[in-house]
Amino acid sequence: MDIIDAIILGIVQGLTEFLPVSSSGHLELVAAILGDSKLPEESMMFTVVLHFATALSTILVFRKDLVEIFKGLFQFKWNEETKFSLKIIISMIPAAIVGVFFNDQLEQFFGGKIVFVGCMLLLTAVLLYLADKAKNTDKPVGFWNAFLVGVSQAIAILPGISRSGATISTSVLLGIDKSKAARFSFLMVVPLILGKIAKDILDGALTYNSESFGYLSAGFIAAFIAGYFACTWMIALVRKSKLTYFSIYCAIVGLIAIGAGLYL
Image (cartoon, rainbow, N blue to C red; front, side, top):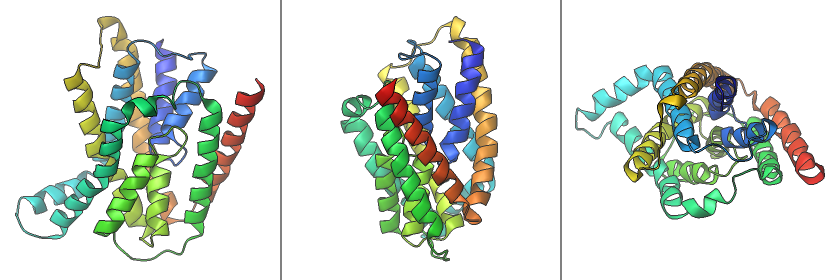
């Protein structure tokens, strides 16, 4: 992998991690376009670096919220910050179970299966359309809602299903305020990403050599910058009910992917 490819993949990851168009699905499609049906040995390290970059961009965007949450937690009271943190933990449970016990099965859906990616993008398109048409409310995220949103996040591990699209759509369809839904969706993924990175490090699954420093750095910077702007932009789009545009986009890309996979 050269630096240009790393920058392209970093931008794709940064944008699609927050925009509801599926980062994993787009990375699969971009890898196919670049002719990389099989990523290099260091692909696990590269993937971790990109996800770490987007996690940091989320932390930067929500830095004020996170400071308030930590302040509330250290008061050791049953306050709103404690409740919110518990909801985040509850939302992580489904994805954590799937990641720990079904990781080998999940890997079978990756590796150039662009027809499957296309079908999942169509599913994402339907979810986004339904969410965009839902009425806005001022309802906050409840504990049961947090678990259901966590289930949608677990399903979104599949390539082609947008994590942000699935979690925000699920929240909105449950009647949750759109701004609160976007905030919860972005914050709930941070501990999950950091936990996955820690697991990969402890498992010894990451390989690194000095030759990969250049493209790892380029990918990190590209993903961080793209992620920061995409996260900020997405919050405004959800609030203004502009998800239909992404629904149309996912439908078009999904149909193209299915056509390419079947006929090329």
